Every structure is written in structure tokens, then in C-alpha cells.
Length: 134
Image (cartoon, rainbow, N blue to C red; front, side, top):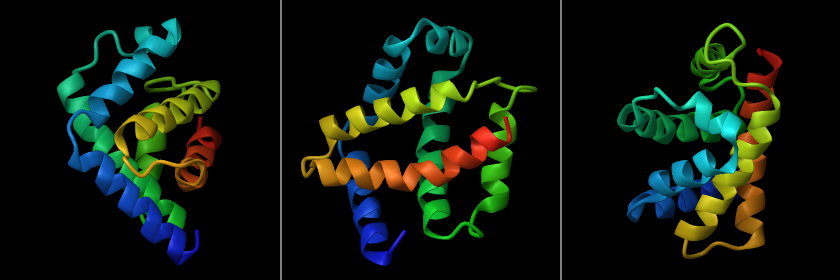
């Protein structure tokens, strides 16, 4: 990811996090998106999960900027989601990313199609790594 895009993705992340409810909106949309997703989260401590998502988004953003950076942390995240742990099937990542972009659209007052593409490009390298470790 080029530095101008890096700066822009960090700015949109901050705008989303500075307001109320971004993470809540994401999980409301994500849980409503699929019975399979809803079942995966049935017994999840959502307070903890919301904190994890905040951190994970930053890890994914930093990884997209430099794939050596946060690589070990992203591998741990991938392991927690693999077939031997949370068992998050590869097809669910597309749904996750679509839901994330929908939440960004609702919470970033400067949202545009370009901002959506920034998010998609920033998340994809990490998603690809996680899918490869499934």
C-alpha cells in the first residue's frame, strides 16, 4: 500500500472509531448477515470480541503497509480462526469484508467509493494470509 493510501486508511479508521457505535454496528450487521455467522458467535463474549476487533483492524492495516510488520501477530490471529480453532471458513471473509465496508459507510462522514476501496485493499493482504492458514 502506498503511503498516501496508508495515511488515508488510518484517517478513515480514526473517523470510524472516534464516533459512537462503529464496532456495535459492524457486529449487528455481521450477525444479521448469515445464520452461519450468528451460530459462530453464539457463545462469544462480545465485550471482549469488540476489543479484539478494534485491535485486529489495526493489525490488518499495518500488515497491508508492510507485510513484515505484525506478521507474527497476524499469524496468531490466523491460527485462532483456522479449522482447528474457531473454524472460520474462507467464504466468510468476503462477508466479513462486505459488512465492514457497510459499517464504515455508516460511520465515516467522509465515506466515498474511494474510501471503500481503501478499506478493501488494506484488509485483503491479511485476509489472504488468514485464508491460506485455514
